[in-house]
Image 1 (cartoon, rainbow, N blue to C red):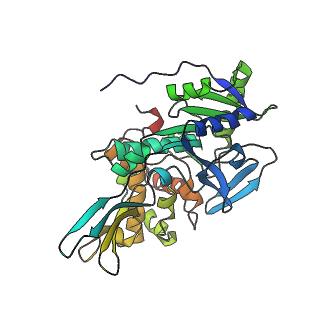
Image 2: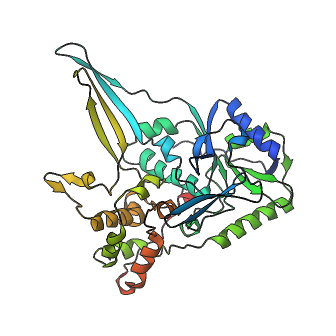
Image 3: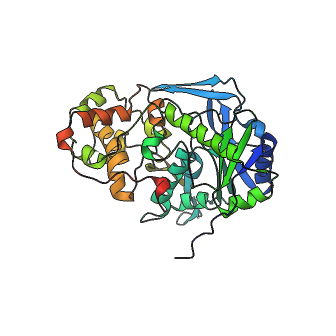
Length: 394
């Protein structure tokens, strides 16, 4: 192993609203393609950011199980929302990814042409702490697992992360239970906190030397004790507003010791097996492979696309699917996400963003389901270590 990365030495600084615009402009000047929150299709989603006016200033979100709405805020906050349906996964691990093309050269020969891997500098702007934690989880799975995923590695090669601590959690968030928010101390190149107490400004901390170099090129003020106290108030207020909690104590033993619990049947009666939860989840990584040929039979393409453990065909082996009931498929998703993921990757597969709750058409809430199993199975819990947080790992 090489020497550890140098840690930044700068103290927290403060950027004005104009400073935020200059930061975005600087990223473009450095050759980054900037992706961040923007309003599209009545939601706040990840998209290209050309200038600071592309941010969803003055917009918030209203989220409850099975419900999402944009709402106009009374202030001009740039980051007065929680998380939307899209995440960095859509860019780093695209829904559809060409793998190779086969072209016929003559009647007996053909050529395999591998898909080009992107070579671009990416800057994710305005990520929430839970989203940064989700990238860390996918890094663990797709970069540092037994086999490196070449597509993910190519997309992840030159990525800069600008995070914004959460001051407006949704009613479906439970990041504090997973130790992934609402604040963060490391994990991103720059960590911002939007302060709205009087002067509209941004407390900025460098998480890496790359972030430190960026700050040095921007006009800024040194943070005062009042600024640091204002940050603490933002995070305390956000933590107090978190309505949901997931008790992770011995969660592996709890779930794996209750595979026949009747609650799975109750969930299956509501679950549509639509796969919305896996599609909006920032860490789910299940895929399938599709092959297509043209009508003339002279060209074939192989493409990887997102799949889901909720799909009946996902475990189709031989004459039938291994998990042929909604009960079995939901149980597989939840136990893998919260329990056996720990066996595979030494971390939980959940970051507490609450997307699966918000975007479930029938409002199934995994925190309620785990709590129900826990309350009705107190004598059936096997010992297991606490769930480690992606933000606390090296």
